[in-house]
Image 1 (cartoon, one colour):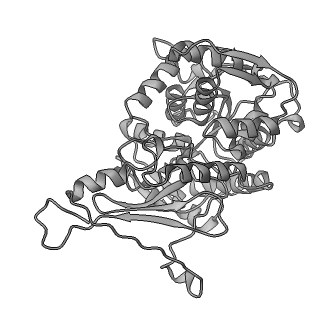
Image 2: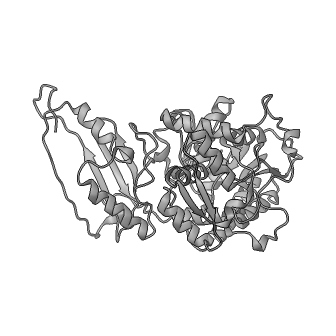
Image 3: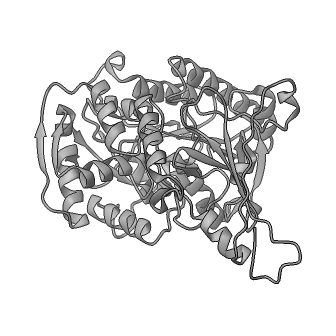
Length: 445
C-alpha cells in the first residue's frame, strides 16, 4: 500500500512498483485525483486518511508492505501533533494487520545538533521515524536531504532562484553543506527497502555522490543550464522568515512551504553513513551525480514529460469542499455568472484552447487583471500564478493550474477548476464546449 500517491514521490513510486511486479493499493482522501494517471486502472484505489482509524484499518487489510509518504507540513501550527497522532495510529494498525514492513521517507538531520534546535519540519520528520520504528513492525526510515528531479519543490526553488536573479543577495544558509540526491535514486531505495530482511529495523541516510553548499548548487545549475554567470552576495540579515517571503516572491513555491525548507537548511545535512548499500547495492554506474540529475530534470521539463510536481499534493489551507450542488450546501448562498459565446470553429479546436489555458500559455482575457490578481494573492500569502502547470497541453484531475486546481475534466467537453487563491469563500471556474445543434462539424459553441 502506498499512502501519499497523489503527491510528488508517491505518484512516481506507484508506477515503479508496478514495473517491479508488485500488486499496489493506493490510499487517497480523494480517489478521483488518481483517476487520470496512466497507471490508475492497474492499481486498487481506496478512500481513506491516515488520521481516520476506520478507513485506515480497512486499507491495511492484507497488506504486506506499507509506504508512509504523508505529512501535515504547512497545515497549521499544530502539524507536529497531527503527524505524531497519525504515525502512532498507522504503526498500531499496521502491526494489528500483520504488515511485515513499513517504509518511510523522512528528512536527513544533522547528527551533532540537539533535536530541540532543529526546525519544526525536521524535528517532526525525525519523531515520525522513531514512532514507526517503535511500532513493532520492521521499519526502514530513509532520510534524504534535497531531492533533485523535475517538478520537485527543491529543484523548482533552485531553478527559479538561479534563472530569475542574475544578481542574488542571499541569506547565510547558502553556505550550508548539503548532500542532494536524485529522485531516481530515492525511488530505487524505496523499492529495494520493501525486501529488507525482517530483522532490519532502523534508519538509513541516503544521498548522492556530491556534497555542495547551496551557493555551489546554484553555480552548478548556472553551468548546466547554460546561463550567464550569477553574482551571489550572502548577507546576514535575511532570517528564515524573511528568506521564505523572498523565495515566495521570486519562485512558484509559496512562503508556507518555503519557510520549513529554509529552516531545514540552517544546519549541515550530510549523510553520516552509507549502510543501505549492504542490502541495496549501488548500480554499476554508481548513484546519480548532481549535474546529471539537473540535466535529466531540465530535459524532462523541455520535453513536457514531468510525471508529478511538488504542487501535485494539495496546497496547505486550500479549500477542498464539494461543489455547491452537493447536499451539504443546502441553505448556503451560491452566486453564478454564466457567459456563452458562439464561435465558428470545430469543437475540438475550441477544446484545445480551453485545455491549454494558464501557465506559460497565459489567460486569454484581461491578462493584466489576472497578473494583478496573482500579485495580490502572493501578498496575502496565497500561491499566486507562478505554479504554472505540469504539462503545457494536457491536464488531469488533481493538477495544479496557477492558483486553481483541476477538479474535473471531461476531454473535449468540460474543464472545472477549483480556486486555491485567497478568497473570502469558495469559487469554481467551469469552461465547457457544446456543439451547435444541427451543425456540420465546422462550428461549435
